[in-house]
Image 1 (cartoon, rainbow, N blue to C red):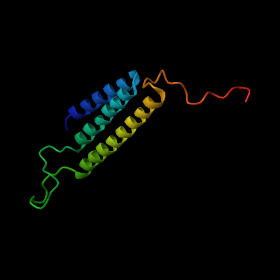
Image 2 (cartoon, rainbow, N blue to C red; image 1 turned 120 degrees about the vertical axis):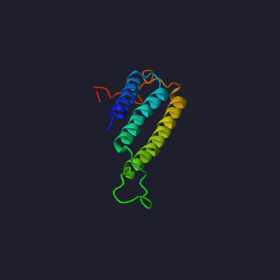
Image 3 (cartoon, rainbow, N blue to C red; image 1 turned 90 degrees about the horizontal axis):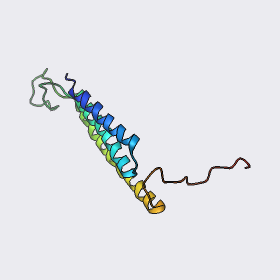
Image 4 (spheres, one colour; image 1 turned 90 degrees about the vertical axis):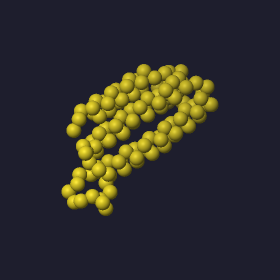
Length: 120
């Protein structure tokens, strides 16, 4: 097993996390979250990789032939679908924030309700 997928996944996660921390725009924030999530794709594929293994179709392979685990591939596909749905939802929320508040800067947004006063 090679160390390269682990390093690539760590680098992608670090870049996405840096973008999340320094983001000043909600669309940029969603993009950085997507980069963080792509680190999981690389990590799962790196874990499921078997050197010189064939596809997980066994009708034409003799018994004992190494094969790639299909569960990991299914997890990656599920992760991609969930990531696309989360990204679409977050972008739809960002559009509504822009329409209602006029900005996508998290620092410029005021709270929805004023904090309760001490007299109440």
